[in-house]
Image 1: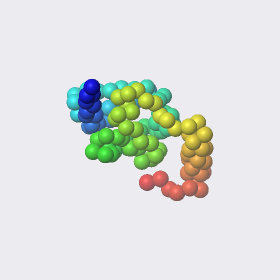
Image 2 (image 1 turned 60 degrees about the vertical axis):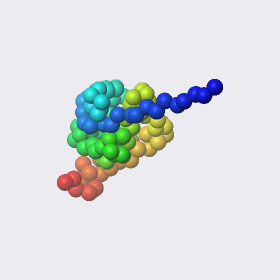
Image 3 (image 1 turned 90 degrees about the vertical axis):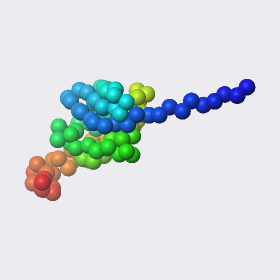
Length: 113
């Protein structure tokens, strides 16, 4: 018996919107996929400015947020996969983030431009 594999083409991201509770991505096939922001804790803890500072990577196969070091793939969104980051890694990131923000607000960190 011959079984042929079906090749599925994953659409590409074209635009991204992040609200207080939702991540929405416009796809190249006309669909808009929305997922709960809670799936991505770094985005939950990001400021609105950080959430809006994204760029498409891999010609639209993923989205990158430089300020919070977050990458999300379109394929992962389509299969319903939330962040795979471990709690240990996330807590370490959150502690470092809070430390940086505290230093900046007290005037001991790098100036914000």
